Image (tube, rainbow, N blue to C red; front, side, top):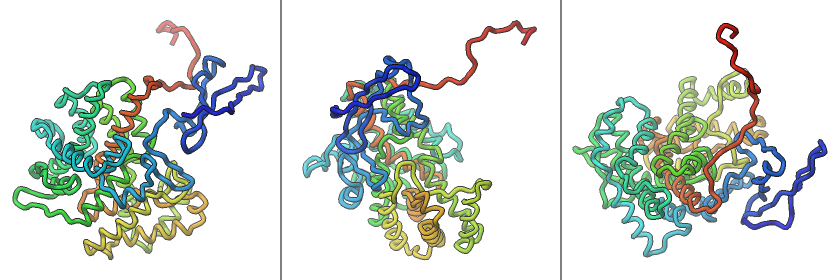
Length: 436
């Protein structure tokens, strides 16, 4: 943070003395007013439900400009990273601050690749779940259980432990997601194969069987790799803030990441692409493209519970830059699989066109977001809808770890402790039982 010569002055209309508050400038983005001493000087807290105007930390990892529709990982535009790098290069960037060079890339890839197996006991742990359990319920349990299997790297204050845990989590998440999928459909687990890339290995573990191997399709592998890159980090969102808050207590990295997985499960966060595809299926059952007008009418009706999923974003007030990339990928995948006439994709394109031209959505800046297209791509690849959010968690794990490590290394970090505006009963005495 760079201190500003300008101070923010807070004045009160009740005659209380005004207070000067420090102002800080980041490298880019809005200035920040430091209110840490506000309570000590005034006896007052700030009130900001949802933290819409509060910076909870300083970070050098990810920057979003919602008005411009810009997303930067360590300063690099997401468009360039998605088109010129693979997921493990982006992992290296988020973890260590720079893209790997020609020597670092194979070394980092080898390190992650040779940690993709999980303890054999994990498969027996899986048996405690019902076969029809939601994958996110399973993943929350599996990730939290990693601390019991890899307890030699659970000291969050030990930099070596944090680095070991980071590699283990990034490497093992694809294996755990594939295992939860195989368990749900009753197929044998497929072990990782070190000769394959990170993403190709994941797809093989998902779709191969002992009696028939899976030959990775380059277009599909690249599409899945792009999904991983686009979801790798997204600044201080709900799940990332959860990981930071959980980690601030000193809990182990596996528990902190499991908390992030649990938060991501919500339909307003990681479950949005699943909700989006379910919405498209509902419109298709109503009658498809011909019924979009009727569906839009229901969306606009304040008395209706119908919502338009996959449009708009809490931060982006312009077109989501990830959505543009995902739209291109969507065309590539459907073309490679010969699904150009896929009814859901046609429906999605028609819905997008109407929403971008309708004054109701334009005035509210409800542009398509990344969830709108990523669900269609995953469905085309063959991934079942309930698994979408688990794949999101797989991709976001590296961002969570990078944010967690940054927080632990920040000399100003403290255990999270939000304040409140209390509106309950004032102090009162307990009456005798007969008088209640």
